[in-house]
Length: 262
Image (tube, rainbow, N blue to C red; front, side, top):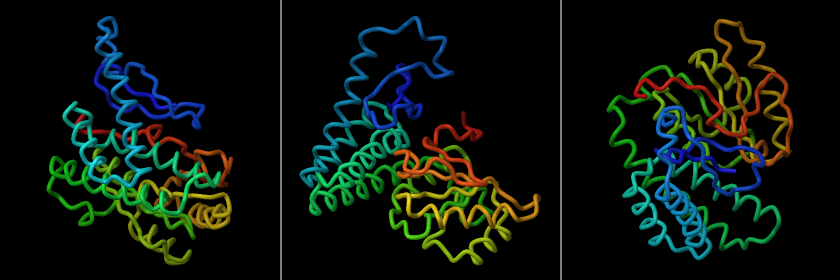
């Protein structure tokens, strides 16, 4: 389920069962002193979030990009942060699309419409978010997190959403596209010395390549060895249950990242 704070309406992550994309509310740490103030207005805001989700899914189903852009603008008028729109509404819709595609209940035309809708929404939200981020270029400094797809995974949007989330948290992130060969990848990790390596895996068959990457990274000297985190559709849907020498991360919000702006 998708968990949002009832007060600040910031996305708090997902909780089992992950296949249930219904919205539930809790109170985040910062808003706990307000817990006794909960009233009907917070219930109404919760329903509004469900409405945004449903409207965006319908817009994608019909390829209505203009409506999708208006929905995003409406959501931002209600002070919903861009990063929460991407993680708490857009990413779950992408998960729904993946499930529908796996069950063969989505046409090729509909899948392409959803893909284009997701790209347009990301571009819109990312442009607005980056206007409020620092002017410094993350690429100009040593990255603290390297992000890349599992070999044979061609889905790029999820990585871009995660990179934007990390930037919002004050962590320098770099996406490596396309995913290099194993030797080149390990050399890149050795030379850039990130704290984290995040790998996105779409289907279970891609686990073989991820296992090889994690095994090579764990052989690096401790001084340059990053933590390896694996997420993506195959993790969230339970297609894979473990990757040796790596941590599975079904929800990026479970990653503890210091936020200097908090």
